[in-house]
Amino acid sequence: DIQMAQSPSSLSASVGDRVTITCRASQSISNFLSWYQQKPGKAPQVLIYAASTLQSGVPSRFRGSGAGTDFTLTISSLQPEDFATYYCQQSYSTPITFGQGTRLEIK
Amino acid sequence: QVQLQESGPGLVKPSQTLSLTCTVSGDSVNTGSYYWTWIRQPAGKGLEWIGRGHFSGSTNYNPSLNSRVSISVDTSKNQFSLRLTSVTAADTAVYYCARSFRVRGVNWFDPWGQGILVTVSS
Image (cartoon, rainbow over all chains, first blue to last red; front, side, top):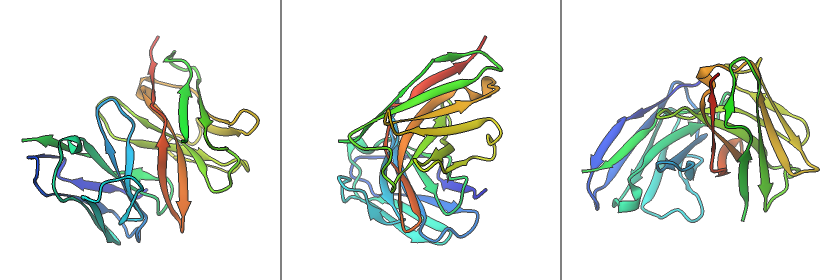
């Protein structure tokens, strides 16, 4: 199985801050990487797929980058609705696997 | 607007079989571009991909569950289903169904159902 490691596991930030979350794969996964946002009690929602393609309807302050083993999700200016948990997910091979999540909290 | 809705028992006894159904509206499960997927999340923990099914009958499962899991797609009802046998407390989780897109090999999940909590307990 391909292991996905996110860092940090949790992060405190303020509205307006720029934040970056990192996801590292245990082997190269090309650009087969997606990012999700999950709010408490809700299902995850896709933000980015193919490492850097913004899902329709997702605000442009979200940006994904990377290829191979190292990927980042950047939120350029945090909004109150962005405080949530974020997951990366690889689809290079089955089983499809997710990172352990990064909890983004209000400072 | 595509919507998915999970249904099934919220309580299953140990050693019994967990059976869930996902009803799809706004799309057809016999659309060849999609796989229909189950994902679970134990309370306070991360996401685990269970497996996926295609209307053609093709399936893929997580090897950690491989011998206990089956996913089927019912085109007549526009539903897909999950069966997990010989459950234990470790199978207690919120179970999500989701539509899986695949473009140039990249798979992502959108939309998801709201999730259903299944507790394994006697």
